Length: 375
Ligand code: PHE
Image (cartoon, rainbow, N blue to C red):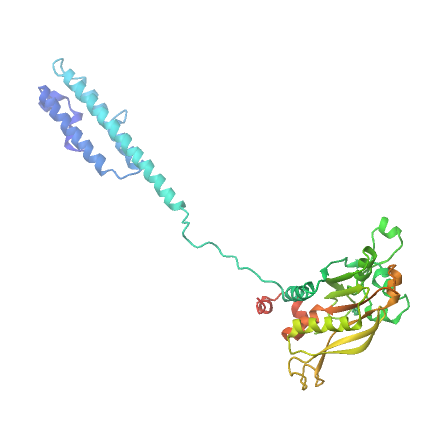
Protein backbone atom coordinates (compact mmCIF):
# COMPACT_ATOMS: atom_id res chain seq x y z
CA UNK A 1 0.00 0.00 0.00
CA UNK A 2 1.14 3.52 -0.75
CA UNK A 3 0.87 6.42 1.69
CA UNK A 4 -2.22 7.58 -0.12
CA UNK A 5 -4.04 4.26 0.16
CA UNK A 6 -2.76 3.77 3.71
CA UNK A 7 -4.54 6.95 4.68
CA UNK A 8 -7.92 5.35 3.96
CA UNK A 9 -7.51 3.27 7.13
CA UNK A 10 -8.10 6.37 9.26
CA UNK A 11 -11.09 8.75 9.51
CA UNK A 12 -10.73 12.07 7.69
CA UNK A 13 -10.69 13.97 11.00
CA UNK A 14 -7.58 12.10 12.07
CA UNK A 15 -5.94 13.13 8.80
CA UNK A 16 -6.77 16.78 9.42
CA UNK A 17 -9.03 16.99 6.38
CA UNK A 18 -11.67 19.61 7.09
CA UNK A 19 -12.69 21.16 3.74
CA UNK A 20 -14.10 20.01 0.42
CA UNK A 21 -10.84 21.14 -1.24
CA UNK A 22 -8.81 18.99 1.10
CA UNK A 23 -11.14 16.05 0.32
CA UNK A 24 -10.65 16.57 -3.41
CA UNK A 25 -6.90 16.68 -2.89
CA UNK A 26 -6.91 13.39 -1.02
CA UNK A 27 -8.96 11.77 -3.81
CA UNK A 28 -6.62 13.18 -6.43
CA UNK A 29 -3.73 11.51 -4.64
CA UNK A 30 -5.64 8.23 -4.52
CA UNK A 31 -6.45 8.45 -8.18
CA UNK A 32 -2.80 9.07 -9.02
CA UNK A 33 -1.81 6.10 -6.86
CA UNK A 34 -4.32 3.90 -8.69
CA UNK A 35 -3.21 5.10 -12.10
CA UNK A 36 0.37 4.33 -11.15
CA UNK A 37 -0.50 0.80 -10.11
CA UNK A 38 -2.65 0.26 -13.22
CA UNK A 39 0.15 1.46 -15.50
CA UNK A 40 2.58 -0.92 -13.82
CA UNK A 41 0.20 -3.88 -14.09
CA UNK A 42 1.37 -6.15 -16.91
CA UNK A 43 -1.17 -7.18 -19.50
CA UNK A 44 -2.88 -10.37 -18.53
CA UNK A 45 -5.78 -11.65 -16.50
CA UNK A 46 -3.65 -12.34 -13.39
CA UNK A 47 -2.41 -8.81 -12.64
CA UNK A 48 -5.80 -7.26 -13.54
CA UNK A 49 -7.39 -9.49 -10.93
CA UNK A 50 -4.86 -8.49 -8.25
CA UNK A 51 -5.50 -4.80 -8.95
CA UNK A 52 -9.25 -5.34 -8.79
CA UNK A 53 -8.95 -7.15 -5.43
CA UNK A 54 -6.85 -4.47 -3.81
CA UNK A 55 -9.12 -1.63 -4.97
CA UNK A 56 -12.58 -3.12 -5.21
CA UNK A 57 -12.31 -6.11 -2.85
CA UNK A 58 -15.50 -6.24 -0.82
CA UNK A 59 -13.87 -6.51 2.63
CA UNK A 60 -10.67 -4.53 2.51
CA UNK A 61 -10.44 -2.99 -0.93
CA UNK A 62 -9.50 0.70 -0.98
CA UNK A 63 -13.01 1.76 -2.04
CA UNK A 64 -14.56 -0.17 0.86
CA UNK A 65 -12.09 1.41 3.31
CA UNK A 66 -13.02 4.87 2.02
CA UNK A 67 -16.69 4.12 2.52
CA UNK A 68 -16.14 2.73 5.99
CA UNK A 69 -13.51 5.15 7.30
CA UNK A 70 -14.09 8.39 5.42
CA UNK A 71 -17.68 8.53 4.24
CA UNK A 72 -19.40 7.11 7.31
CA UNK A 73 -17.42 9.26 9.73
CA UNK A 74 -17.71 12.47 7.71
CA UNK A 75 -19.84 15.15 9.17
CA UNK A 76 -22.79 16.56 7.17
CA UNK A 77 -20.60 19.38 5.86
CA UNK A 78 -18.05 17.09 4.17
CA UNK A 79 -20.20 14.06 3.35
CA UNK A 80 -21.55 15.30 -0.04
CA UNK A 81 -18.01 16.11 -1.21
CA UNK A 82 -16.68 12.72 -0.05
CA UNK A 83 -19.64 10.92 -1.69
CA UNK A 84 -19.18 12.73 -4.99
CA UNK A 85 -15.41 12.14 -5.07
CA UNK A 86 -15.88 8.49 -4.09
CA UNK A 87 -18.34 7.93 -6.94
CA UNK A 88 -15.98 9.54 -9.40
CA UNK A 89 -13.08 7.47 -8.17
CA UNK A 90 -15.15 4.26 -8.35
CA UNK A 91 -16.22 5.07 -11.91
CA UNK A 92 -12.60 5.72 -12.88
CA UNK A 93 -11.33 2.52 -11.25
CA UNK A 94 -14.04 0.36 -12.81
CA UNK A 95 -13.45 1.76 -16.27
CA UNK A 96 -9.71 1.38 -16.08
CA UNK A 97 -9.96 -2.20 -14.76
CA UNK A 98 -12.28 -3.10 -17.59
CA UNK A 99 -9.84 -1.67 -20.13
CA UNK A 100 -7.04 -3.69 -18.56
CA UNK A 101 -9.08 -6.87 -18.73
CA UNK A 102 -10.01 -6.32 -22.36
CA UNK A 103 -6.39 -5.61 -23.26
CA UNK A 104 -5.42 -8.82 -21.50
CA UNK A 105 -7.97 -10.84 -23.44
CA UNK A 106 -6.93 -9.31 -26.75
CA UNK A 107 -3.28 -10.07 -26.02
CA UNK A 108 -4.12 -13.69 -25.25
CA UNK A 109 -6.10 -13.96 -28.46
CA UNK A 110 -3.31 -12.45 -30.52
CA UNK A 111 -0.79 -14.81 -28.99
CA UNK A 112 -2.99 -17.80 -29.83
CA UNK A 113 -3.53 -16.57 -33.38
CA UNK A 114 0.20 -16.10 -33.85
CA UNK A 115 0.82 -19.61 -32.62
CA UNK A 116 -1.75 -21.10 -34.97
CA UNK A 117 -1.07 -18.97 -38.00
CA UNK A 118 -0.64 -20.83 -41.29
CA UNK A 119 1.98 -19.29 -43.50
CA UNK A 120 0.64 -19.76 -47.00
CA UNK A 121 3.89 -18.59 -48.52
CA UNK A 122 5.79 -21.62 -47.19
CA UNK A 123 6.41 -24.42 -49.70
CA UNK A 124 3.89 -27.27 -49.41
CA UNK A 125 4.55 -30.94 -48.78
CA UNK A 126 5.77 -32.36 -52.08
CA UNK A 127 4.75 -35.89 -52.94
CA UNK A 128 7.15 -37.17 -55.57
CA UNK A 129 5.43 -38.30 -58.75
CA UNK A 130 6.22 -41.78 -59.97
CA UNK A 131 6.62 -42.68 -63.59
CA UNK A 132 5.24 -45.33 -65.87
CA UNK A 133 6.70 -48.79 -65.48
CA UNK A 134 9.06 -49.70 -68.28
CA UNK A 135 6.72 -52.48 -69.41
CA UNK A 136 3.87 -49.95 -69.68
CA UNK A 137 6.15 -47.69 -71.70
CA UNK A 138 6.91 -50.59 -74.04
CA UNK A 139 3.20 -51.40 -74.38
CA UNK A 140 2.59 -47.76 -75.28
CA UNK A 141 5.43 -47.81 -77.84
CA UNK A 142 4.05 -50.92 -79.54
CA UNK A 143 0.49 -49.59 -79.52
CA UNK A 144 1.57 -46.27 -81.01
CA UNK A 145 3.29 -48.02 -83.93
CA UNK A 146 0.34 -50.28 -84.77
CA UNK A 147 -2.28 -47.58 -84.23
CA UNK A 148 -0.43 -45.56 -86.88
CA UNK A 149 -0.93 -48.53 -89.25
CA UNK A 150 -4.69 -48.62 -88.70
CA UNK A 151 -4.84 -51.38 -86.07
CA UNK A 152 -7.32 -51.14 -83.18
CA UNK A 153 -6.42 -52.03 -79.58
CA UNK A 154 -8.66 -54.59 -77.83
CA UNK A 155 -8.31 -56.45 -74.56
CA UNK A 156 -9.67 -59.78 -73.39
CA UNK A 157 -10.14 -62.03 -70.35
CA UNK A 158 -7.19 -63.58 -68.54
CA UNK A 159 -9.30 -66.60 -67.57
CA UNK A 160 -10.23 -68.70 -70.60
CA UNK A 161 -11.76 -72.01 -71.55
CA UNK A 162 -9.54 -74.64 -73.18
CA UNK A 163 -11.64 -74.12 -76.31
CA UNK A 164 -10.46 -70.53 -76.83
CA UNK A 165 -6.96 -71.05 -75.51
CA UNK A 166 -6.33 -74.28 -77.49
CA UNK A 167 -8.98 -76.00 -79.60
CA UNK A 168 -10.18 -73.09 -81.72
CA UNK A 169 -6.53 -72.24 -82.34
CA UNK A 170 -6.12 -75.64 -83.92
CA UNK A 171 -4.46 -77.20 -80.86
CA UNK A 172 -6.50 -80.35 -80.12
CA UNK A 173 -6.43 -82.04 -76.74
CA UNK A 174 -3.49 -84.38 -77.29
CA UNK A 175 -1.41 -82.06 -79.43
CA UNK A 176 2.19 -81.84 -78.20
CA UNK A 177 2.06 -78.03 -78.49
CA UNK A 178 0.01 -78.05 -75.28
CA UNK A 179 3.00 -79.41 -73.36
CA UNK A 180 5.01 -76.23 -73.94
CA UNK A 181 2.10 -74.20 -72.63
CA UNK A 182 1.32 -76.11 -69.47
CA UNK A 183 -0.60 -73.75 -67.29
CA UNK A 184 -2.78 -73.04 -64.26
CA UNK A 185 -6.30 -74.45 -64.21
CA UNK A 186 -8.68 -72.73 -61.84
CA UNK A 187 -11.62 -74.12 -59.89
CA UNK A 188 -14.85 -72.54 -61.00
CA UNK A 189 -17.53 -71.75 -58.41
CA UNK A 190 -20.73 -73.83 -58.65
CA UNK A 191 -23.32 -72.09 -60.81
CA UNK A 192 -23.91 -71.13 -64.42
CA UNK A 193 -20.23 -71.24 -65.43
CA UNK A 194 -19.39 -74.69 -64.11
CA UNK A 195 -22.74 -76.10 -65.24
CA UNK A 196 -21.51 -75.62 -68.81
CA UNK A 197 -18.98 -78.23 -67.83
CA UNK A 198 -16.03 -76.31 -69.18
CA UNK A 199 -12.71 -76.11 -67.43
CA UNK A 200 -11.15 -72.71 -66.83
CA UNK A 201 -7.49 -71.83 -67.12
CA UNK A 202 -5.26 -68.77 -67.06
CA UNK A 203 -4.58 -68.00 -70.72
CA UNK A 204 -1.15 -69.08 -71.90
CA UNK A 205 -1.07 -66.51 -74.69
CA UNK A 206 -3.14 -63.62 -76.04
CA UNK A 207 -4.08 -65.66 -79.13
CA UNK A 208 -7.58 -66.60 -77.77
CA UNK A 209 -8.53 -62.99 -78.56
CA UNK A 210 -8.04 -63.83 -82.25
CA UNK A 211 -10.97 -66.21 -81.90
CA UNK A 212 -13.14 -63.91 -79.75
CA UNK A 213 -12.64 -61.06 -82.19
CA UNK A 214 -13.42 -63.07 -85.34
CA UNK A 215 -16.48 -64.59 -83.64
CA UNK A 216 -17.77 -61.10 -82.93
CA UNK A 217 -17.07 -59.26 -86.16
CA UNK A 218 -16.75 -60.01 -89.86
CA UNK A 219 -13.54 -59.28 -91.79
CA UNK A 220 -11.69 -56.99 -92.24
CA UNK A 221 -9.98 -57.31 -88.88
CA UNK A 222 -6.90 -55.42 -87.78
CA UNK A 223 -6.32 -55.63 -84.05
CA UNK A 224 -3.60 -55.81 -81.45
CA UNK A 225 -4.20 -57.28 -77.99
CA UNK A 226 -1.97 -56.18 -75.12
CA UNK A 227 -2.24 -58.22 -71.93
CA UNK A 228 -0.96 -60.61 -69.29
CA UNK A 229 -0.43 -64.31 -69.92
CA UNK A 230 0.51 -67.19 -67.62
CA UNK A 231 2.57 -70.35 -67.87
CA UNK A 232 3.81 -72.86 -65.36
CA UNK A 233 7.43 -71.80 -65.83
CA UNK A 234 10.06 -71.68 -63.13
CA UNK A 235 11.37 -68.14 -62.64
CA UNK A 236 14.82 -67.36 -64.03
CA UNK A 237 16.44 -64.51 -65.95
CA UNK A 238 14.16 -65.05 -68.96
CA UNK A 239 11.10 -66.80 -67.49
CA UNK A 240 8.26 -65.80 -65.21
CA UNK A 241 4.94 -67.50 -64.45
CA UNK A 242 3.25 -64.28 -65.60
CA UNK A 243 4.46 -62.20 -68.50
CA UNK A 244 3.12 -59.87 -71.17
CA UNK A 245 2.24 -60.21 -74.81
CA UNK A 246 0.83 -58.11 -77.59
CA UNK A 247 -1.11 -60.25 -80.04
CA UNK A 248 -1.62 -59.03 -83.58
CA UNK A 249 -4.18 -60.17 -86.14
CA UNK A 250 -4.98 -58.88 -89.60
CA UNK A 251 -7.55 -60.62 -91.81
CA UNK A 252 -8.90 -59.26 -95.06
CA UNK A 253 -9.66 -60.34 -98.62
CA UNK A 254 -6.29 -59.51 -100.12
CA UNK A 255 -3.62 -59.88 -97.46
CA UNK A 256 -0.44 -61.37 -98.87
CA UNK A 257 2.73 -62.69 -97.33
CA UNK A 258 4.35 -59.49 -98.65
CA UNK A 259 2.06 -57.30 -96.59
CA UNK A 260 2.80 -59.45 -93.56
CA UNK A 261 6.56 -59.18 -94.05
CA UNK A 262 6.43 -55.45 -94.77
CA UNK A 263 4.34 -54.75 -91.67
CA UNK A 264 6.63 -56.77 -89.43
CA UNK A 265 9.74 -55.10 -90.82
CA UNK A 266 8.20 -51.68 -90.36
CA UNK A 267 7.37 -52.48 -86.75
CA UNK A 268 10.88 -53.75 -85.98
CA UNK A 269 12.53 -50.66 -87.47
CA UNK A 270 10.16 -48.30 -85.65
CA UNK A 271 10.69 -50.14 -82.38
CA UNK A 272 14.44 -50.85 -82.45
CA UNK A 273 15.81 -48.29 -84.91
CA UNK A 274 16.06 -47.59 -88.66
CA UNK A 275 19.29 -49.56 -89.19
CA UNK A 276 17.86 -52.86 -87.93
CA UNK A 277 17.41 -55.63 -90.50
CA UNK A 278 14.88 -58.44 -90.12
CA UNK A 279 15.02 -62.08 -91.09
CA UNK A 280 12.21 -64.63 -91.20
CA UNK A 281 13.11 -68.13 -90.08
CA UNK A 282 10.77 -71.13 -90.55
CA UNK A 283 9.00 -72.16 -87.40
CA UNK A 284 5.85 -73.91 -86.26
CA UNK A 285 2.62 -72.82 -84.60
CA UNK A 286 -0.60 -74.86 -84.94
CA UNK A 287 -2.62 -71.74 -85.82
CA UNK A 288 -0.33 -70.24 -88.51
CA UNK A 289 0.86 -71.68 -91.80
CA UNK A 290 3.53 -70.94 -92.76
CA UNK A 291 4.93 -69.99 -89.36
CA UNK A 292 8.04 -67.95 -88.78
CA UNK A 293 10.30 -66.58 -86.10
CA UNK A 294 11.23 -62.96 -86.70
CA UNK A 295 14.90 -62.26 -86.04
CA UNK A 296 16.50 -58.81 -85.90
CA UNK A 297 20.07 -58.02 -86.81
CA UNK A 298 21.95 -57.64 -83.51
CA UNK A 299 21.69 -54.02 -82.42
CA UNK A 300 24.71 -54.29 -80.15
CA UNK A 301 27.30 -55.48 -82.68
CA UNK A 302 25.42 -54.62 -85.89
CA UNK A 303 25.62 -58.22 -87.05
CA UNK A 304 29.31 -59.00 -86.65
CA UNK A 305 28.77 -61.24 -83.60
CA UNK A 306 28.87 -60.54 -79.87
CA UNK A 307 27.84 -61.91 -76.48
CA UNK A 308 24.20 -60.77 -76.80
CA UNK A 309 23.61 -62.49 -80.16
CA UNK A 310 25.80 -65.44 -79.16
CA UNK A 311 28.13 -64.62 -82.10
CA UNK A 312 25.32 -65.26 -84.63
CA UNK A 313 24.64 -61.64 -85.57
CA UNK A 314 20.89 -62.22 -85.12
CA UNK A 315 18.48 -62.01 -82.22
CA UNK A 316 15.19 -63.90 -82.07
CA UNK A 317 12.34 -61.44 -81.49
CA UNK A 318 8.92 -63.11 -81.76
CA UNK A 319 6.74 -65.68 -83.49
CA UNK A 320 4.29 -65.01 -86.31
CA UNK A 321 2.80 -66.41 -89.49
CA UNK A 322 -0.08 -66.46 -91.95
CA UNK A 323 -3.33 -67.49 -90.26
CA UNK A 324 -3.87 -71.24 -90.76
CA UNK A 325 -7.08 -71.70 -92.81
CA UNK A 326 -8.18 -74.31 -90.27
CA UNK A 327 -8.68 -71.48 -87.75
CA UNK A 328 -11.22 -69.77 -90.05
CA UNK A 329 -13.31 -72.92 -89.80
CA UNK A 330 -13.81 -72.32 -86.06
CA UNK A 331 -15.17 -68.81 -86.53
CA UNK A 332 -17.22 -69.19 -89.71
CA UNK A 333 -14.87 -67.15 -91.85
CA UNK A 334 -14.63 -68.12 -95.51
CA UNK A 335 -11.12 -69.52 -95.93
CA UNK A 336 -11.40 -69.28 -99.71
CA UNK A 337 -12.10 -65.53 -99.60
CA UNK A 338 -9.95 -64.42 -96.69
CA UNK A 339 -6.31 -64.45 -95.73
CA UNK A 340 -4.33 -62.85 -92.94
CA UNK A 341 -1.43 -62.92 -90.59
CA UNK A 342 -0.88 -63.03 -86.83
CA UNK A 343 1.99 -62.39 -84.46
CA UNK A 344 2.67 -62.65 -80.76
CA UNK A 345 5.11 -60.15 -79.30
CA UNK A 346 6.71 -60.91 -75.94
CA UNK A 347 6.68 -57.50 -74.28
CA UNK A 348 9.05 -58.46 -71.45
CA UNK A 349 11.53 -59.96 -73.90
CA UNK A 350 11.36 -56.97 -76.25
CA UNK A 351 11.90 -54.58 -73.30
CA UNK A 352 14.83 -56.66 -72.08
CA UNK A 353 16.45 -56.56 -75.51
CA UNK A 354 15.78 -52.90 -76.21
CA UNK A 355 16.98 -51.62 -72.83
CA UNK A 356 19.67 -54.24 -72.12
CA UNK A 357 17.99 -55.71 -69.03
CA UNK A 358 19.54 -59.07 -68.21
CA UNK A 359 17.02 -60.34 -65.65
CA UNK A 360 13.28 -60.31 -66.35
CA UNK A 361 12.60 -60.58 -62.58
CA UNK A 362 13.67 -56.94 -62.23
CA UNK A 363 10.36 -55.97 -63.83
CA UNK A 364 8.39 -57.50 -60.99
CA UNK A 365 10.44 -56.64 -57.89
CA UNK A 366 9.30 -53.02 -57.58
CA UNK A 367 12.78 -51.82 -56.70
CA UNK A 368 12.77 -48.07 -57.25
CA UNK A 369 16.52 -48.09 -57.91
CA UNK A 370 15.70 -50.07 -61.06
CA UNK A 371 12.44 -48.30 -61.95
CA UNK A 372 14.00 -44.81 -61.62
CA UNK A 373 16.35 -45.58 -64.48
CA UNK A 374 13.39 -45.41 -66.85
CA UNK A 375 11.62 -42.16 -65.99
N1 PHE B 1 0.75 -67.41 -79.29
C1 PHE B 1 2.10 -67.72 -79.61
C2 PHE B 1 2.88 -67.93 -78.32
O1 PHE B 1 2.53 -67.41 -77.31
C3 PHE B 1 2.75 -66.63 -80.41
C4 PHE B 1 2.15 -66.44 -81.75
C5 PHE B 1 1.08 -65.61 -81.91
C6 PHE B 1 2.66 -67.08 -82.85
C7 PHE B 1 0.48 -65.41 -83.16
C8 PHE B 1 2.11 -66.89 -84.10
C9 PHE B 1 1.04 -66.06 -84.23
O2 PHE B 1 3.89 -68.56 -78.32
